[in-house]
Image: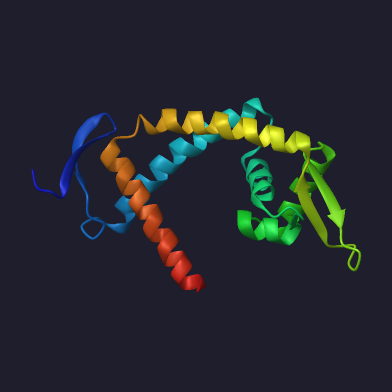
Length: 167
């Protein structure tokens, strides 16, 4: 077996797994990344259902929680999470209604709202973070190590390319 071929279980069968990005077709790379991503997303969504949260709501809570003490604008939340301004505004309003997020309007512009986690939102975020971390670690154990390493490398390369484009 060459250095580039590592056995991996795909669809219940052992197949050679090419370890080089250059040696694999773009669609094959994409399929593997999507499969791993789907497993991780499913584990996350299943865990969030117990807390009656959707994936984007959780991402918004986490983004607000990671933000500065003065809060984040709805526009900043939308940009960081990668959703439209309308979606971020609607979901953040629901989070405010559920008392998970507090909002503060700017004195000079009442349309500009800053969002901060409430104590209840921070507690929920801490609980979901630990539960999701546990679910992801359990899921990761079922993905072959070589395939997982490849998944991480592809994501790291994509992040690097994205940051190079943004600069």
